Image (tube, rainbow, N blue to C red):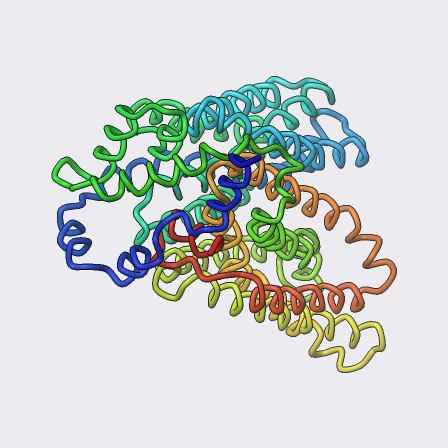
Length: 478
């Protein structure tokens, strides 16, 4: 009992001395001098390799849209069979989300990315050689599983290797490459056969699998597993051969040693009081990201463009390019503006976009101002996707990778990712039913959910810009 009380007492204390935290956040002279010697080239290269997994994620997500008519014609699929093919991806991703944390904790972040790559390659080959519905569905399920693992492990790996001044921008590159993968699949899917498009999905997986041999493992994972020599070598490689890693290595080791005194965390342990705030932040952001209607909006985009007099293919390309451009700009400003301001601006834009689309449907249903309906609908959709790409698309994943203590990062990240994928499925599944109930009511509902998200971000979500992962945990536990 005395040991247990001692551990609990230490849990309540910050994992680093407060004065040390404040000194580090203000950027002491020693910190600034050492920063001049840090060479981030290996961090950039490692991130570039890791986000090939994000691009593979986007390729999987964007595959079914441009290939629907061709696959149905070649394989003679009914609409119901193709709907299963499209949606089974999400179920595979849910399974991947459940297992991603334990896999990443057991065999490492690089090992988890290798496993995901193998599943994606096997899935794409099954789709390429498919002559019937079963190989198609099995291949789609396998690529979905790979997506689920990638969606967790890539942002976590980047957050764990990046210095605090680059972590936000580099983690946001995850979302940028997902958008790029979706966009490229949309565009080249208009000129390639569906089998050829499946083969292009193998390329980023192959680059990732081979590239992992040339980059270091996450130093924090190595420290957690007791591999001290490998930990120091990996950290030195990431910071540059002339960088002084003494202080950072000691900070990570102190944090790991404190966590080692805690019991191994299971799913139920997440709901203990000491973890509750981290879980609330990580899961809450995923809930508002998905239940704000992103998958429903995307599902209805082409129809809205057509009703506005746009070509659906041209509208899709505009949508894809806008998404990539805004997400790219987000990568530049996230470490300057901060996570919380971007979330608040993004959520505000989502509310306005939903209201514009809702008003357009209201006018259409009541035959009022019909000449303005197309312009309102298109403006609302473009505002919505631009706002989503500016913050709510990427920042929840950045915060998720930062907010969990390393001893629950695996199980906590799995829960957050599972909630995200379940939300994606539920919104997609219910969208048509909601539109049948009330087209404008659907978008007013999404606007209300996004408005609640703004309140959640103001009250609950902390700013993590410019802090090390250990400093974030110290602030939460203080």
